[in-house]
Every structure is written in C-alpha cells, then in structure tokens.
Length: 201
Length: 201
DNA sequence: GCAATCTCTGACCATCCAGTCAAAACCCAC
DNA sequence: GTGGGTTTTGACTGGATGGTCAGAGATTGC
Figure 1 (tube, rainbow over the protein chains, first blue to last red):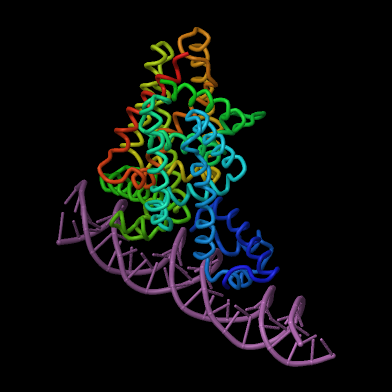
Figure 2 (figure 1 turned 90 degrees about the vertical axis):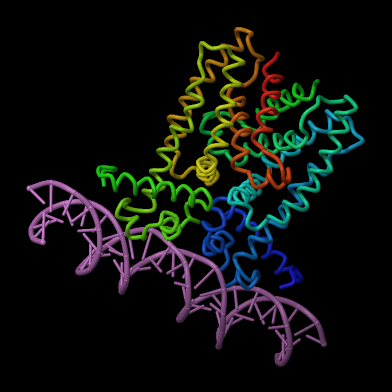
C-alpha cells in the first residue's frame, strides 16, 4: 500500500494510526495488541492488516511521523532572535506539545525508556545533529554575554525533562496535586521563572 | 512461600528479583517474559514459579520494595536544616539514585507512564502525603524569606524530572552527548547551578 | 448496468507464553 | 545411609496473539 491514494485509504490509514497511537502510548509496543487497536479504530483486525503489513509497520509509521513534530519546536529557535526570548519561547512550545500531544510524548518516552530499539538511527543522526547545531547557537549567545554560561546540551535536556514530565508522568502529577489543578498551566509560570533566573548571569 | 526462610530460598528469591528488575525495567511488564527472567536468573521457569506464585507477584514485590528506596531522599530532607543546602542535598541524593539504580528508575517510569495500574494506591497515599508534608516545609522556608517563592510542588516535580531524566532517557542523553561523557557527573554541576539560581530570590 | 478493482471479513494457523503437575534430584538431620 | 522434607525439572495445557487467505461485498470507471 504506497500510502493514501483513495479517499477511503486516506481516512482509514488515519483512523488506524490514531487508534494505534492511543494504544501504543498507553501500553507500549509489546503491551499493545492488534485486537485492541482494531477495536479502538472500529475496524476488524484483518482490515488493519490490509492497510499496514504488520504491527511493526504501524508502530514504525507512528514513530517516523512523530519525530518531525517533536523536533519542530527546537528547529524553530531562531539564531538571530533575542536569546532569552527564543529559549523561553522554545520552552513554551515544548510545553504546548505536552498539553496538546501527550500521547505522542508517551509513545516517545516508551521508545526511549526501552533503549530506543526502533529509533536509534534517528536519535544518533537527525536528533543529535539538530542539538549540536542549536547548542552551537547557544554557546555563541553565551560567549556574547547575552545569557549566562551553562552547558548548552544539559540546558536542552533540562527543557525536555521539565516539559515532557507533565505529559509522561501525568498520572503522578495529578495524584500529587489533587483535584482542581491545571498542571500545565501552573508549570508554565513555574518554568518561566525558572529559566528567567537560570539564564540571567 | 512466606519469603526467605532457608539459605537457598533467600539466595534464589534475590536472584529472581534482580533478574526480574533487569528484564521488567528494560521491556515493561507486558514486554517481559518469564522465560527471559528465568534465563537471566539462571533458573528454570517452573523453578521461578516455585518461589513466586505468578509474574504479577514478582512485579509487585519489586514495586513494593522500590517505593521506599524511592522516597527516602525526600524523607531525609530536614525541616530544621538550612533550606538551600537541604534542597541541593536532595537533588544530589536523587541524582545518586539515577546513577546507582537506573533500572529501578526505569521500572518506576514504565509503571507511571502506563497509568500506574499497579501503584495507584501508593501514589495517591504514601507519595502524596510525603510531598504534602515537605511542600509545607518549603512553603514555610519561603515565608521566612530564606528561599525564593515558588510553587513547592512544581519545585519537587522539577527535581524528579531533571534527575530521573538521566536514568530514564539514558540512551538519548548518551547519543546526543556522544562519546567521552559522564552525563550524571556533568548534570551534577548543571543542576547545582540551576537550583542555586532558582532558589535565590 | 457491468466488469474490474478495491475493501472487508470469518475462519483459520502457528507461535508464544503464563502457569500446572507429577516425578526426579537434592539436601540434611539422624 | 536412610527417610522426610525441600528444590528442581521435563512435559504439558489452555488461552492469547500476530498474521494468512479465500472469498464476499462495495465502488468506480466505462
């Protein structure tokens, strides 16, 4: 199936990928079953396998699609912009992803947690290259005295950790906060303060 | 099997739990098989099931044991100590756990990621209670003007996120840093700076 | 309308996997 | 060394699960 050609193919492929995202992100690759995915998608299992050759293939399709979405916020960091504003905007975009695409975040987390068996190449290639590039930009900003000196890579890790935590550990965050909280709204203020202080020399 | 009575039982129970930790933390509950665990433990599958009644039970035993280890660093934060030193010491202890017990961290992460199906009670009970208690201590410190005003619960989340990231996302961290790095050693310096700045009003 | 193609399904396999069990092997106190 | 308990195992079972396939049903171009 060289991906969506007809209307029906388009629609069903999307339905399947959405259902698969739901199930994979909640149970991991091994924990997810084709029957579950089919159920959520409202299709029969053989019908899934008419659109995708295997469980592997569905998972792979999700991961591939995911990576771009995931890297976009960092890509968008403008080397010519005002450093503090650029970094804060990056934090905010990343937090928006945790709010709007928590399933994607968990899918990614599951994959990395288990040693990235299906993403190694992408991480060592595309991801590393992008981080190297942006780390260089940050280093320049630091040398120009526009933000405090810090290890730029660990600065990026901190942004990943702090923002994705709210998607990946959602259950825990909510349990600890109790009723009547909007974790991510609160996090926005907290992280703004944190990075404002951290980046000021 | 009311746990270790004889030498053999003692030794084999430990061997099994260690092997199970290895396998569960790497593949998640569903992704792990008894055969794998038996293989790693160097025992036969029926022999595992002589010591533990089920796969569930092994997993449960690990989680129960884990929770205490996991909460100890926060418990050890002294309400009568010097605030900044106490918080920094907590960060360091938590980072030590990521260094010395990465498998435990990943086991925990796997569990929470999948909605904490086997830990809900502990999280809503014990964990929440401890966080409430320590958050109150931090709030007092803030009111006394000894550290900057921040949401204490999100401050704790930030410590969890930043320290556990180095265990849970180890593959990614190493891939991005490349050869010749000791991620956690570097993180220690970074986090020290981060929290020093954050806590200074 | 009708053939060609696309979409869908019930029935089916082969494999994997948690868990059982009867009996063998082992250990140790006497 | 022998008897009673403990530990270990090979062989097995039943259910879940990924995947196949032949054919039925729906669509579409003509």
